[in-house]
View 1 (cartoon, one colour):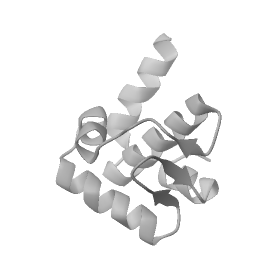
View 2: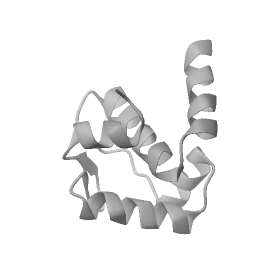
View 3: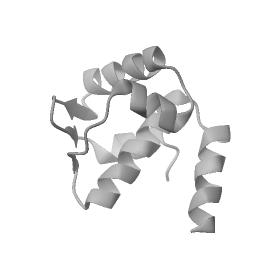
View 4: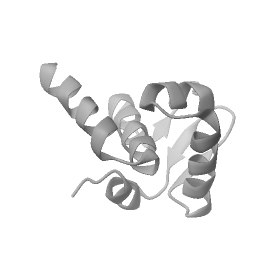
Length: 92
């Protein structure tokens, strides 16, 4: 558990907002065991989780949708291009 906390702190410091959003989405998908994140998340909630503003998260999410990395609906977020999202999150 301590390693996970250390990784989260590291991502807050080393990644830009795009990377932090990507990292969070990947973590939530991994927890769900699916490319579908059905947990209700507002942009405000995501912003609080990654230490950013709602406006910046909204812009970042829109960019991820436009690039085809994710699909967003009222009920879920679907990861469409995991490899590209992992690259955004700085994963090798």
